[in-house]
Length: 386
Ligand code: SF4
Image (cartoon, rainbow, N blue to C red):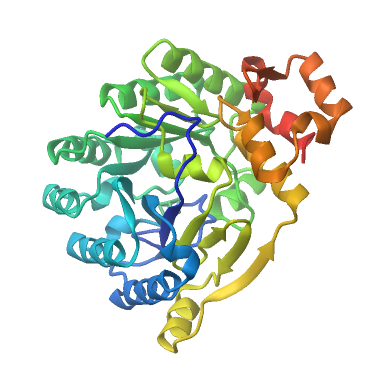
């Protein structure tokens, strides 16, 4: 199911956060608790919040273009429970007929039967957290699966009929060489995924990995080595059918992740589950982070919100420019003008002229975009526009 080409306005999405994993990876700072059997009561809480949000006039007026169950590891739940959740959500919200429905997964939670059940429940896109095919590197960051498990899981995903699937890979792992990363990429490409997400490892404070790095027990590849890995990915994938449509994301033509495109365009979305965020036409609401508190609040009939923020027009404009510039296509000037009555030229003035003169940004066909040579320097360039 190819997704819309970039440039079309995306419909709002629905995100469901599942904060449980079989084990905790050593670099993970996401809201996710290790457990063997995730509580069914958590899914009940998600449904309670879904019912609250479905009552909003705003929700009733929307047609949603995507539903993304992420985590954590959503596939830690038995497939029949995920299928039931999807069925309930489909009854509460108006989903587009060919809505993109993604489930995130880890290789050690994917059985053929479970995958087939998810297909029958309407899931049409699967995202698999492979991270690496190198057993030594996987062990170095405490991943709970190995190469053989990942390869078998990918084969089952295909066998179950998922034509549209993403593989997540991480580069910059402890002790990883550029050669090892190229080997990971080559193995990933043999599986012919429609989408590849390549993220650089960031050692988040408070994680076991950060502690080992601080103690000198492990070291990460330096910036130059990571830049080489990025560059080799860009070259290898560019020579194939893959398009780098976002700084960290590549896809076969027509297979952009529609759900994430909506985020990068600063669109609206509903967020269900602990630590999830909703954004309703610029009003951003954050759910409480703890899964236990989230469940208790909803069981007591209360709203599970911890934060609410309405961005002013200029702040929302800046945010939309910065997020949109992550896309290789960039941002449409006319669209910005329509939404915010502002243009980058008028708002950023000489700063924008300087970035254009330096060849870091381009302004062509009514779109402002990072130039090809600015892609590796994206963070530095974007920080000028905050
Ligand atoms: S699988 Fe993902 S969410 Fe779960 S612990 Fe590992 S990095 Fe965190």
